[in-house]
Length: 165
Image (tube, rainbow, N blue to C red):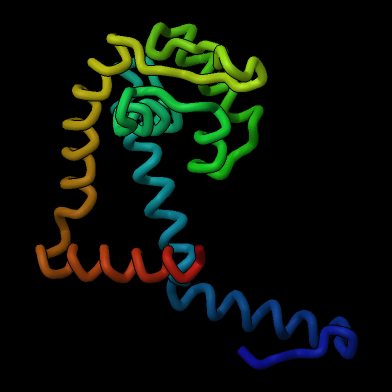
């Protein structure tokens, strides 16, 4: 599409631009739209699969993060930074996981302002079960691609991700 000075548009020009945009949209999805749609499908399927375990994908991501730490615990601040979400979001997810018995929260004995959470034995067991289910989901997600195409997709997505960081 051409660059437009929007201050110079009249109603007819606006109509023509909208018509042009619709025509372009019908030619196919943009990369951004495709990524969003694929992500939404992946998230929907993952949430459906995790439902039998009583957790959401967001909750499972937090459990998996804890499972990959050295001692199975971290601070809520670390989780905020890693997932790039607000304190309220992390605190809510942690509270729901604690209510389900999958994590245990505790206050840092040296700094009472800092809250830690740690995987419970039930949380660690769920991570083992969910990991294999998530790997199976990813295999199904990528089964339409050859091994070479999967590697290329991974490299390209990583390149875009790194660029945006």
